[in-house]
Amino acid sequence: MSVIDLEKRFQEKIDSDIRIEPRDWMPEKYRTTLIRQIGQHAHSEIVGMLPEGNWITRAPSLKRKVALLAKVQDEAGHGLYLYSAAETLGAERDEMVEELHSGKAKYSSIFNYPTLTWADMGAIGWLVDGAAIQNQIPLCHCSYGPYARAMIRICKEESFHQRQGFEIMTVLCAGTPAQKAMAQDALNRFWWPSLMMFGPPDSESTHTEQSQKWGIKRFTNDELRQRFVDMIAPQADHLGITIPDPDLKWNEERQHYDFGEIDWEEFWHVVKGHGPCNKQRIEARTKAWEEGAWVREAALAYAEKHSNTQTSKSKAV
Amino acid sequence: MKSWPLYEVFIRSKAGLHHKHAGSLHAADAEMAIENARDVYCRRNEGVSIWVVLSSDITASNPDNSEELFDPAEDKIYRHPTFYHVPEGVKHL
Ligand SMILES: [Fe+2]
Ligand SMILES: [Fe+2]
Image (cartoon, rainbow over all chains, first blue to last red; front, side):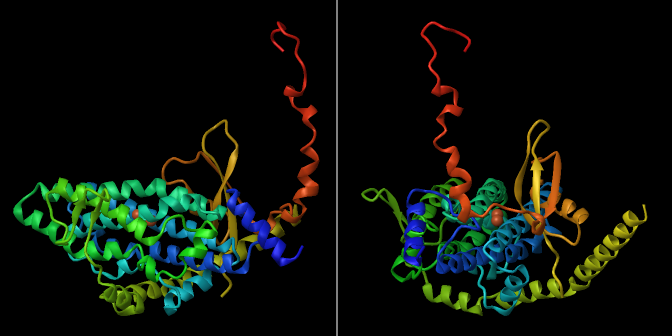
């Protein structure tokens, strides 16, 4: 079959909602686009453990500590599901890790902001996991089977993340004036970076059209961002704290919230590596990888030795 | 350095059900693969039993041969009960 015929058949499958599985024929560009996107997503889960890991030892109660620990562990799991999904496309795990460390592969820019107070754990769960959920739900129907299946698992686990974050915010907002001010401050710092999590505006987004045709993307960046704002604004009202945007208001005609201009210069600045914590995050990941090398080697040596003795044992019988 | 091999993980979610493919992971050996599978795929009571198998040990059908493998079943409607006529009024059939 010619490539044109194969491409036509491939597109027909996608159009009739038939999932693509690892060994099916797929255009090379579909494969590389997915490897890049899934890899970036996996890296975000892994690097995303760092800002929250920062507060595990200082959580204000045992209840908060076990919840945060469980959440961070989930994020490690999410990273692993996604790396595995990328590997079904022929990507190598070690290469992906190297690309993260060298800066060749990107991860979500939100994780390059510091977590300065305990309220940031609330704001992250509420806003960052909230934004992640908006991004991830449509991916549960993505055309690539292993990615869609990983996303279904992930989405199931995410809802606890957002709720525990919102609960932290609720408690702080009902607390002392200082606690409420802390919650407000966290919202102030995380609001705009959370909106940036949906990526550049549609007018500048380069991959959207092809990705939509391939069933990798169902909604545009701006559509998802709008949904997020519509979801969060009433929740902020409930908490009694103010979203730091003077232009934010309900638009009766559109049946959506209007909101102010995002500082895209800041976004690109952080994406290009100049955010407050980019250097620190990659250093932490590289350090963990390098200092764990002897463990990986030793485990492999042990496994090899063990399998040798087992073979000789079974031979002896 | 050689990297850890890939294992496929199958989980029985409760007694009475089949093991079902859950995903894959890297581990130095099968024993570690089971421990990792517990942490990666069973954090919320998803399983009562785990199988792991080296991905490289799985033999899979080739999607290019799907037609010759699966098409022959397509036109054999006489393998389904709905193909057969049951006279009106006859019960338990
Ligand atoms: Fe996650
Ligand atoms: Fe999460």
